[in-house]
Image (tube, rainbow, N blue to C red; front, side, top):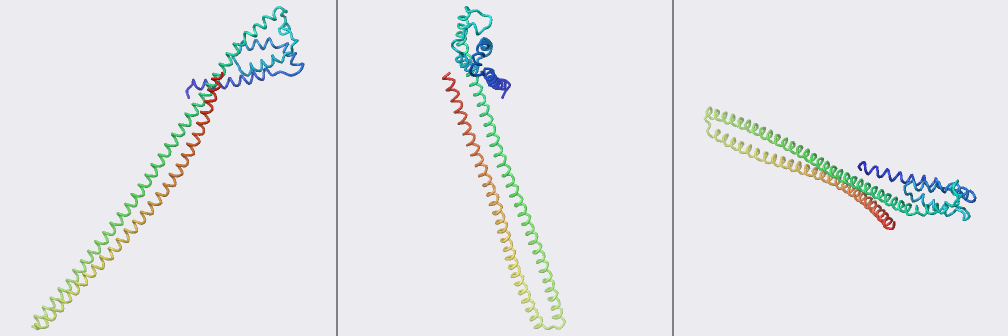
Length: 303
């Protein structure tokens, strides 16, 4: 709204106040007091109408008051100091003022309609601005919700990667421990084998050496088989743990996604409901304003 529109609106409001003031000014009593008042004030009333701008309420009151004057009133009684010869001139002057009064009435109606139209246009502009702000706020809310969801997913991803790194470190540690145990067992076997060789050389008991060698070989094979089975069992345990961890992480992610999706859906439904209510209000106000504009235009056409 610029300064020119503000001045026009203020002018329209001042015209309404002037109409109310003029209506109060021309209010007259009834009965015999009305006749006395008419005889004393008609001349001054006509003078005011000539000097003042067109006013619909004031002129209608003036016409009604003049119609209420008694028939026996004389023109020389309306203006003190005039003679009987001036009565015809006073009537002519009053009759000449009628087109001017009608023109001013039409001008006043036109100005009032223009002011009302300007006010309605300003109200429509304000409503459009409010609707634009509401859409902007909704877009910002959706963007923020998307950012929060992405941050949560990134946090879950980091936790999952950290957990996988921990599992890998534990696997490497178990592998190193297993290798160390294997080296120890192999060292024991080697020591036993060396001892057998010493015994074999010392006692020259070939059969005993062969028997001991077979036993050591069988023991070595048994230990190797146990190591293979132990490694297989450990791998199965690790695989089950990894599968359980993956399943748990997947369930947690699904729960987070479902909660986030449900929250976003509820928020979107609430925002959609607010948008529909806002549109409905805007539509009702626009229809009311269009009806008012149409009524004002009809009045202008009739005028």
